Amino acid sequence: MTDTILLKRSTSDGTWSVAPTASVREPKYTLNAEGDLFRLVAARDVYDANGRMVVRAGGAGGLVFSETNLSHHGGCWVDWGAKVIGGAQVSGDARVSEESTVSGNARVNQRAYIGGSAVVTGNGQISGNARVWGEARVEGYLDDGAQAYDTAFVGYGWALAGNVTAGGRVRFNTADGQSCRITSGTFRGRMQMDSCRSFLVINTCWGPLTIAPCDRHDGWMATIGCQDVTTFEALQELADENGTPFEEALLPYWQTMVTEAIRRWENPSLNEEDDDDDDEDDD
View 1 (tube, rainbow, N blue to C red):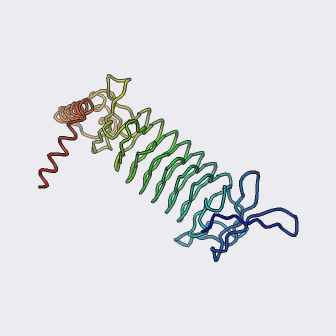
View 2 (cartoon, rainbow, N blue to C red):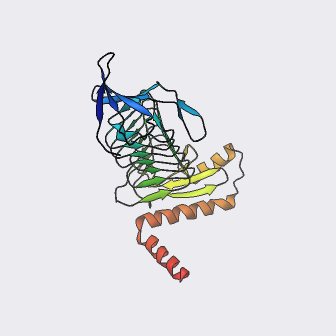
View 3 (cartoon, helix red, strand yellow):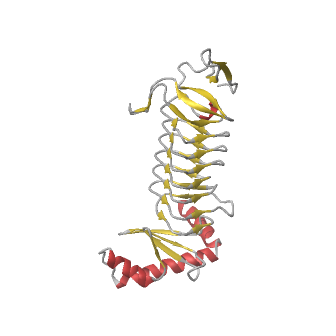
């Protein structure tokens, strides 16, 4: 599709609008100038892949910078109050809603949803059934059923997938340029992750236990579900509150896991040695 924008003037009221390029056989929308941006107006009824109506013909949508921001194919749409600007692209059955913003070179596709006052920018990509809302900011990658909300930040280089949820004030910062992918876990509170070696996730009978370094608590912090846990005794109390048996025999196991995690944070070469051992086993 060409990037050329064709302007046409209404014969009734003299206002300018943007006509979709001729390469689109059945344009989904027209664009009406509104300040420096353009207001979407549905040119036909729009349905998603499941046959659900997204917007009726004539319905007004959000703001875009140009026609390249929203595909004419599929059920993707930008609702009133939301905007897609810069080189960002929305396609598939994706929905940008409420007061959210998609900008930069971000991509929102498939069945992804952006809502609240969330911002997806930079090279961020939201795919699958991923959801971003609240005041979250994403510059990384969310896929499958991953979710980011509250004031969570997902930086460039991070990929959250599967059933991962990031909320509260959690921040995924990529300070060392690594590409980091997480496929399980719930991250909340004020936790900050600076690389893929910054945390350890252990699946337990009452939810994923995440152990991460934290300056506030002698160098480490554990989060289980939505609660911060700072001592092994607190793990016992949490288990009791949830009605989950927690045998004393398991305490040494947690201690071992935490000790090993700290040892690896301090000696990153240990991870590389394990990778080498795995390669030898494969041979």
